[in-house]
Length: 71
Image (cartoon, rainbow, N blue to C red; front, side, top):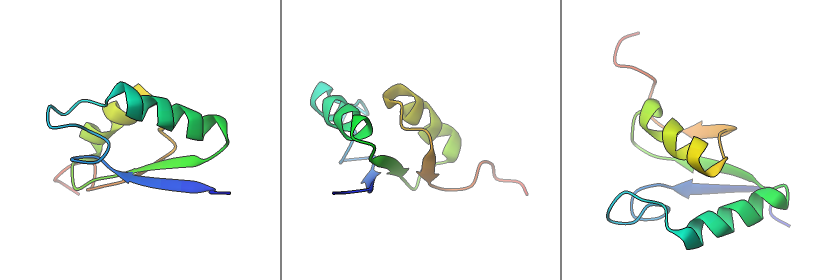
């Protein structure tokens, strides 16, 4: 059984309009119900990815660029 599923955003989870299809939402929900951790991965800034993570309820882990441009 899978324990973790890492998913890229653009062109994978998101369609060409930047939206999550109902089919993808269904499969993410099914994976979460089975206890599989969903990790969203992207070259986007974290603030952009967080909204998508919140939309699908997969906001435990995110792999992306840093939160802001200044450190």
